[in-house]
Amino acid sequence: MLEQLCLDEALLDAAKEVFETMIFMSLEGCAGDDTPIQGDSMMGSITFRIMFEGSLDGCMSICCTTDCARTIAANMLAINTPEGVSETEICDAIGEVTNMVMGSVKSRIQDRVGNLDVSIPTVVTGRELESSLGDHATKVGVRTLVDGQDVIQLTLLYRERR
Image (cartoon, rainbow, N blue to C red; front, side, top):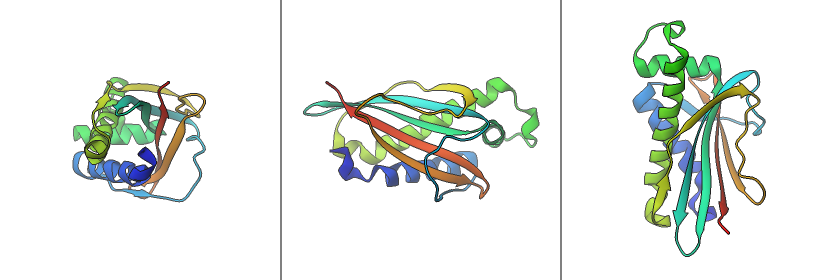
């Protein structure tokens, strides 16, 4: 069912909308594989469930370097120097960006999939971060450039609930 919805396009369009209107940064798809972001990074993730004849469980995540996350937070908070943003503010900003992008994805696909329930976002820091739903999950990955320079990996995973 979800394969027919062009999820990569919905994910990219949703992220573009959020970044351009709420963060005042441009976002564009770029070539590349879905290898993890290298170096210190942050990942915001949010889970969802779609109920229809059966049901699907899924997870949407946004991963970028900590430097990129700091710039995103500074733009969201209208702070001129990214160095002035605290770690708490960065985590809050990445969680909120994740929530807004998932909300935008939801608005793009909900009329075709029915009820879509979404959790609250979580944010983790580390190196070479990846989302996983375990075996039998379908992965939709979109690699992007924000303001033409920093790579952000958008990932949407889903699987049929058994």
